[in-house]
Image: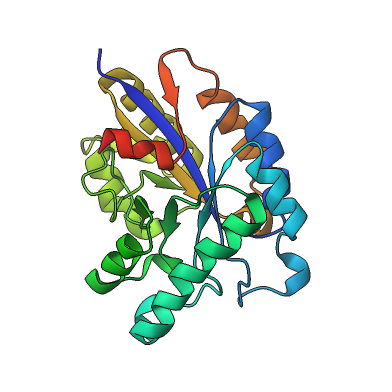
Length: 235
């Protein structure tokens, strides 16, 4: 039987990550939290504190998400390099651990930014591309599912479900689709990568549904649970 690998990742460094980390730990799931220490999209009181980042790092992997979460293609090469390098340095100072992985803010990047990430010493970088079940390029790694309903994904959902109308209707909601993807990976092997934002989960009142999903996919002896950094071995 082919190996079924499951990883999760959570972006931005919002204070609700603390609640999310508790849930992940409860269900035996590994995760990578991509933190932008000075994320400009939120008020400072809504970001993880230094101590909270340190606490989460004891149980989970911390990845860099730039310093301020600015979209890299919208700033100069020098500014982008500074965002990529300084976030690594800052998070290593906070956690006392090597920061090995990076997530492009908003999924926006060019080949230049891939090279900057490599030069900074990262060994894996995540995009926001969905419906991927392999790691073809560890510096432009895709994901399987975003914890959010994407109505524009109907064609991709239908293709994943082999264009079976009843299955498509049953799996229109993100959590139903998440279970279908999990079942497929357990059966056929592959890398299953779930990601999202704790602030988004809270804004759309999805905590209960997320907890139900975690119960479904957690602690399964058929599955190897890994951090994003450990996906390097499967590329």
